[in-house]
Length: 96
Image (cartoon, rainbow, N blue to C red):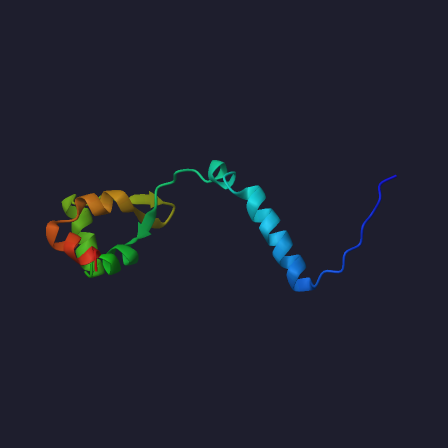
């Protein structure tokens, strides 16, 4: 039979101990469950990022400057492709 030791610990200390134990157990293991996914932006997010209107984003799609991905009814844009397609004028704006 196992022996039990009872140590008085405040609720705050117990939360901290458990949190530290969980964080320590998960460190490094979470990365195997999080795939290197692409980050996608909506039309509105693209417009906000480059300080342009939704009409401009639509014109960029029609001109082939950027490519949209349709997922159901949603139109999304790969962030890395958007940043690569941006002209020097808009690259300056995205750093602000």
